[in-house]
Length: 133
Image (cartoon, rainbow, N blue to C red; front, side, top):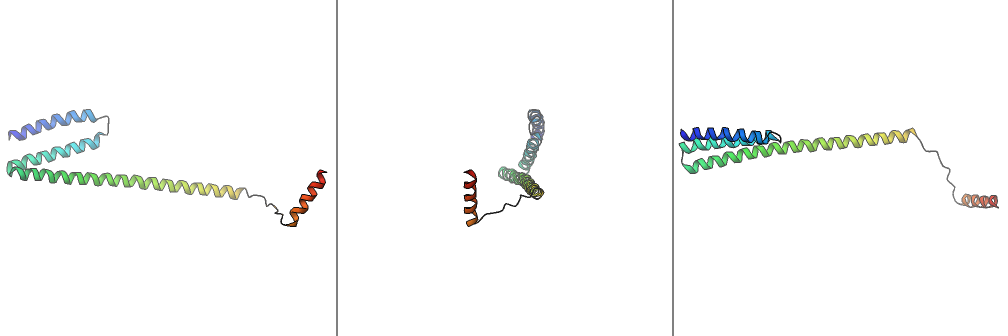
């Protein structure tokens, strides 16, 4: 009983100190992880009074693994949603650029240039030379 009381007092002191230290930074995730650690510690303390020491250690390790897997899955999902949003934004921007390019292209059609071929080039060249002289 005394161990549980000391654990609760120590947990309150540590949580309050860490909360004020981390308040300015990304505190929500850190406080959640600390609270999960305290819950796992409390479960380990209870398991130690009920079962042998190695079973309590195995319980704490199992719970730690479970919590870390859940946390990693949540982070993976949030990263995936961010990348999906970024990809969607990029495709929308490209589509808008193509649309504006095509509207500009349709709005100002280029004048048709008459192409000179073969002998026509030679005759134009000769005419230009005669005009210069």
